[in-house]
Image 1: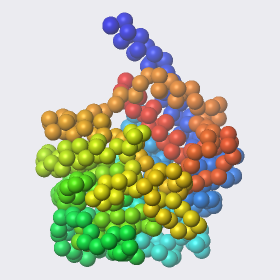
Image 2 (image 1 turned 90 degrees about the vertical axis):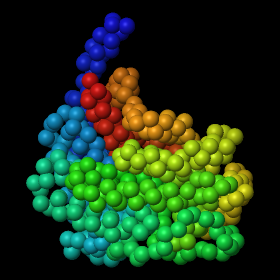
Image 3 (image 1 turned 135 degrees about the vertical axis):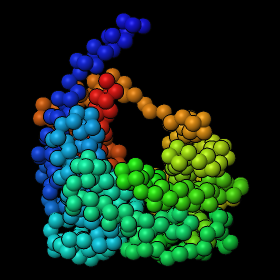
Image 4 (image 1 turned 45 degrees about the vertical axis):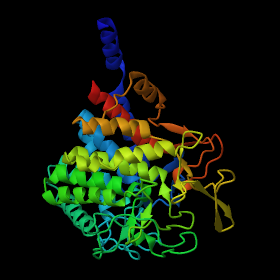
Length: 456
């Protein structure tokens, strides 16, 4: 055993991890960034760029895996190496985000540095125009805020512009929290007070009634809104030591307890109205129990319980896990939707611009994920750990994974991806087998090597 440990230590020491990180980061920062920011995908010659669709040279993306994702990877590398280069790269990304901070305090999915572009919005700096909808969808505001707060801390709160941006965003986020602890998908200003009541099944025929035009103003779990907000509040509390962020985090946990549906389906929906009934969102998102959002709700409650030390946030979890395990599809996946009360898996087929509900998983609309991978085993382990007073387990980066990541970097300092035909975030258009660069791959690899370096 001793010999194996010595051999492993020798292999770790021989891997050029720090040098690989620097080569990759130098290429990405010096060649790929625009105004310090990033989009999702790039052609190898860097002449074509994609965020949500084709991007111009004046545009960067906020929504992960865009600018905040890359910036947080640079910060991870700074923590692992103490190399100021990475902090400067993260600061560049932060300043790019601050340029596009909205008057309402948060962010939308992209930023355009060309003032007259149709993609600009109502930026605080006065250089934009148009919509002022701060968004929590897909982690847009949350990820931007997390990068800005963590860079603020790394700079010891000495950059006044960065610190002010964080304060403005945090004030706006807290003003967007409803009295019951929930958050909307978007906001333009403080939300109105609403009654606090527990979740219930709709009191009408949900198939034909109850569609709400402005569903984005309602209580939202879709696309892990609650989990991403929780992580931002946890970061805010740890960085700034202000009790109001701790209070907001606990209120969010209390909302998830309220939103836990009663029997026979003790899990969570994607979206609720102010009566706490599951509601329609987009026309392919019906009122239903949501498999993946339920896993995200469990994950968020575990995180809140771990930070607060209060086990009341764990109370809904055993029943929810049992229900979800009993609802697994024959292939071991969870359906995106389960019909209210009957618990039949629900899907959608598409005919032109219209959608039809179906119980069959054949011939589904291809633009949406109708099933999700089960994470129930890992959630059960994390629940048991926190209930026992332990932290959720942290996976050590295997040596072989680090080695493959190091060896995958090409001679120019690029991690090159090849298009396999699988739908990409943002729906970038590549030919089968065509090579491209991915901000998600860069960020994952740089973060993985940073974790490996810290494990040494």
